Each structure stands twice: as structure tokens, then as C-alpha cells.
Image (tube, rainbow over all chains, first blue to last red; front, side, top):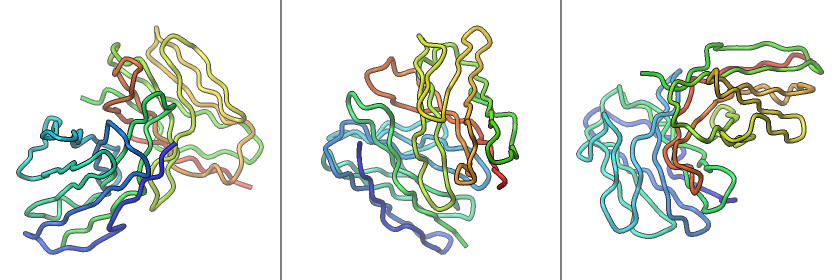
Length: 114
Length: 115
């Protein structure tokens, strides 16, 4: 299993600003992911955070809007840039454990943009 | 294009009875399916999974059934308990089994179990 923490747990931000969300895992993992859950919607994958190389973004998500860092095998950050109210969502990181029985999710960061 | 669909937004069940949550998918490349439970202000918690080579997997009160020909899976909870009240998400992966990779989620079903 894996224990995942995220900071901050929630934030209220002004339009046009940026917020960086941190994800820390208690063990080394190869695969880390960032998801978004918009209000009343399902979870959607933003990108795969690759250690030592650029993140792999899903269709509809771009690096300029959602820059991701992955400096080592236990940590990643997601930045939501130039925020608008449409960015109000829960942002979740997740990890795959090799040979594990599931993909584990962090507690999420609830972002509200005014 | 919603590749994983949960057509029932909500389900209400009496305590002790069976809860059946349904999920349909369209992508025949999906080879692993997972069910997650989510409480407000928390991340999704894994419940049970099933490989496409199986048609049933059981874990305690939870059983998942997979019908590949119909591209349909269901989660059975027996007996249902008030603590089971949460949002349930069906998710699918086409990563081939060595890891889960990208998960494609359904919209979720809100389960309410009444005492």
C-alpha cells in the first residue's frame, strides 16, 4: 500500500493567480498521476508525472496551464496557472505500486477560484 | 466520448439489503476494472478490482461481476450498511496488468443506505 499526502488540503484563490499543489508518497513509486474532479463530475486524468523527464499530458491539458514537476520518486507538484473560476475543482494525485493491487489516491486539494 | 458510464446517479437501499451498482464501458481494450468509494473531502478509496480474464471477484461483502460480451460490470454489496453510504466510482484501465496507468472513471453513483 501507499500513504499519500497533499498540500494544501484546500485553498481559495483569486482569478489570475497560480497555485502549486504538492504530493508526497511514503515510498518510492514509478508512476504518479494528477487527476481533476470538477464539481459534480467524474475524475479526469490531467497528466502522468514522469521522474526525470517532462510530464505526459492528456488531451485538453497543456503544460503552460498545468506545469508539473517530479524531482524524485516520492514527490511531485502540480501548478494551476493563471486561474479562472472554471479551474475550481478537486485536484488529486495518485500512484501505482509495482505489483500492487490498485492505484492509490491522495486526499485531494479542493481549489476554489473567485 | 464517455468510455465508462454509470447511468444511475443515485441509489437508495435499506440496511441489510443488497446494493447493486452498475457500470458500462465501450472500449474493448480495457483489461482491468476497479471500484472506488469516495467520501466528501477525501480521496477515492479502493474497494475491489477484476481482471478481464475473470467474470467474478469476491471480497467479503463486496462482489464484482464482469460481463465482457455486454461490456458491463456490477458491484454487489451484501448486506448493505449505513457506513457504505458514499459515492461509488467505476474505473477502467488498458495498461496490460503490470501497472494500472491511466484510469478512466465513470460519473459515479451516490449510494445511500438507510437504517
